[in-house]
Length: 140
Image 1 (cartoon, rainbow, N blue to C red):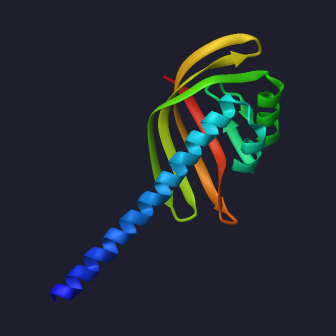
Image 2: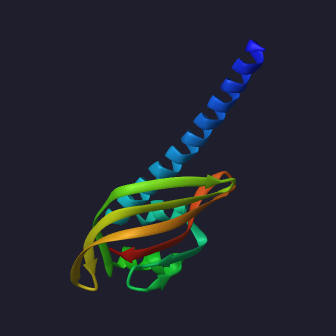
C-alpha cells in the first residue's frame, strides 16, 4: 500500500513538473518575443510567428504575419519597451493560451504612445516548435 501511494505521488509530482516546464517555456518565449519586438529582431520574430497569424492591436488594427513584420521592420511601428506586469500560461495539449498585462511604449507613424494593455494570445505547437497564432489586446 505504501509503495502504491508513493508511486502515485511521484507520478503526480512528475506530471505537475512537466506542465510547469511547458508553462515556463512559453513564458520565456513570450518574453523573448517582447524583447525581439523592441529590438526589431525580425529574424527571430519570423521564426516564432505562425504563418496564419492574426495580430489584433488595441486600436482595432488587424495584421497578418507579413504586415506585422513589415510594420516593425520599416519603423512605422517602433516598440521601445514591452514590460509585462502579469502573465498566466495555460497549456491545452498542442496549444497554449497566455493572458496578461503589459506596459508598452513606442512610436506609431511618428507619434509617441505609452499604454497599458490586457492581452490574450494563443500559441500552437507545430513540428516541435511553439508559434504565436493569435494576439488580441485592449487598452486599460
